[in-house]
Amino acid sequence: MNEHKERYWNYLMGKVVKTTPENVEQAHQALFHATMNLPQAAAWCGMTKKEIKQTFREYLKYHAPDYQISENSVALPRGKEQSSP
Image 1: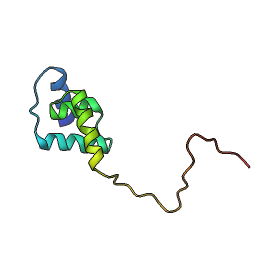
Image 2: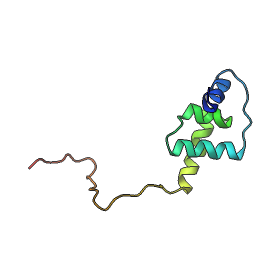
Image 3: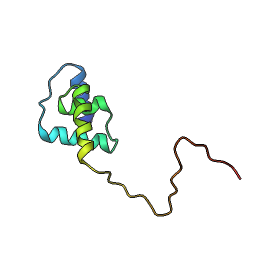
Image 4: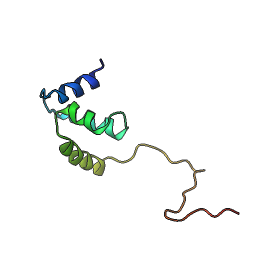
């Protein structure tokens, strides 16, 4: 069993995981890159789902997106349908 699943299983079984800044940072990065879901990230760092949501919102405020938009991409207007020629 990999470490993520093991921590999640321990979380479900009620075993306490110690919250450390390193664990929280790893959970935030995993949420940011979509490699963990919310319950797994909460279990990883020993927080509740509500706590991880609140701290992840703060994380998003101070961390810019790390992807590049290509020059050839076209932005579609929101809320409007495309008209076909």
